[in-house]
Amino acid sequence: MMIEAKKYKGIDYIQLEELPQTQQERIRETLNSDLLIKIMIDGKIINNCLQYKDYSFWYASVFKSKQLESAPAKTDSEELVSKLAFK
Image (cartoon, rainbow, N blue to C red; front, side, top):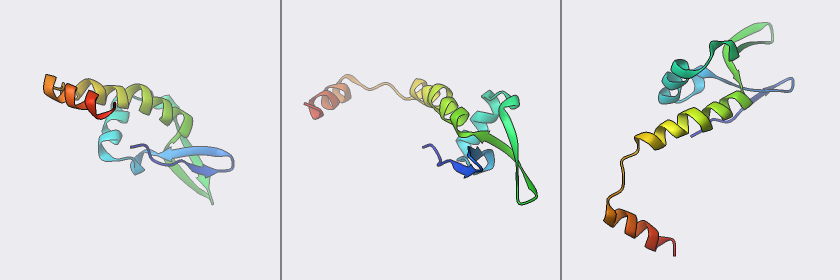
């Protein structure tokens, strides 16, 4: 599940440390570190931030697609039940 964006002075962002553990691990493996930003809030520098648009794109194109690839295949009977359930 995606986390909500934080907003600061018109910047929508997330902090990597606030992601669920599986996303933290995966994003660190696959994300170009040049996309990470630092934001100064009340004189404190907040590290490991990512613009929300970049997080959204990563989530849809990398994280979700990987989950779909690793999902177990349905058996024929499960496939039939799921088709019947939506008619």
